[in-house]
Image (cartoon, rainbow, N blue to C red; front, side, top):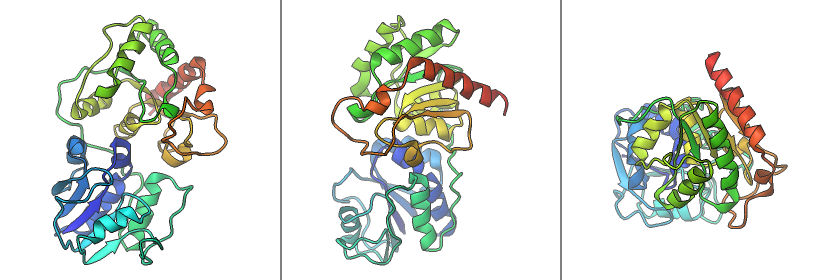
Length: 308
């Protein structure tokens, strides 16, 4: 068995897709297991080639994981905690970044300024596994969703990455006036924010509640996605849906869509990348983004998609 650890969120899973597919191709006769949160199952299925899902929460022991896998692959972090979570399973080999605190030297060095997709591909390449960084597409989950909508997604994991709801509302209203069918999406914890944005936009019926599979299908069928630096941006990349992604503390060089796709527009006014989980108020780089900029970028994204 090959066991990969990636017990994080939507965007984290999406950026590991090329690496997971590289592992699948390199070990066609082995069971490939992925330790990840169970709620990500619809996206794990959409990757294809994962034989077993091991329910795992971030930073929790891997109680459900099988002992003594042939290879344990740490796609979770630089160590030492994630290295140790896999070591207790007594794998035949641990593929991970070198970590002196974990006592693991057999691995490449960690680079802070590296794009997340490239990072994990580089790790498995070190161990001889070919990896295609452009292999980001996902299968579309079977779900009955409206087609051709424009998604406005105001939420993000940390307050520092949330553009003000008033500005999202202004963009939603102006897109609606331009003929877009606007829907506002968010996680269950973000429903109050979604309602506020929809009401400020004068679109009180625009909030749509979905599970993860339905959200993925909605993005795949959408006309446009407007969002911050969060998981749904990676779904837009996975389904090649035109998007505008607003970055704050974290540079798009680290987490942005492929630079050669003009139908994914990014806006960032930062000068250096910081932690993405900052607990404070909206990051100044994000506050510098204007509604007019977002609308202009939306037009560019749609024009680029139309010319494909």
